[in-house]
Image 1 (cartoon, helix red, strand yellow):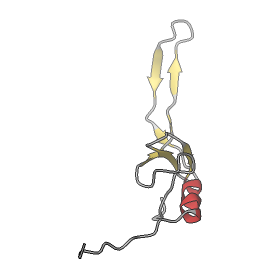
Image 2 (cartoon, one colour):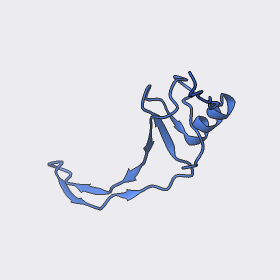
Image 3 (cartoon, rainbow, N blue to C red):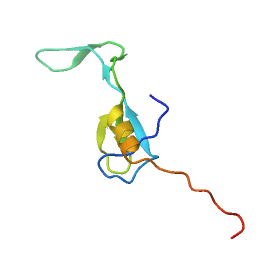
Length: 85
């Protein structure tokens, strides 16, 4: 994951709450008659070229670059707080 700001391109309100979605593959053998599982292998993580990100506000899921590009199109500017007020 890149160290850049995200902004959800769907709900356009979330900049902080996200999940990374990972994919796994797990092989298994079933009995053809009973359907019971006979053998299970260890899960293996699938290699992905780019992380899949999910917004925790609206559940929109997309590749990381969509969230980064949306944040670049609508950057959040830091506002300075005046302690004299």
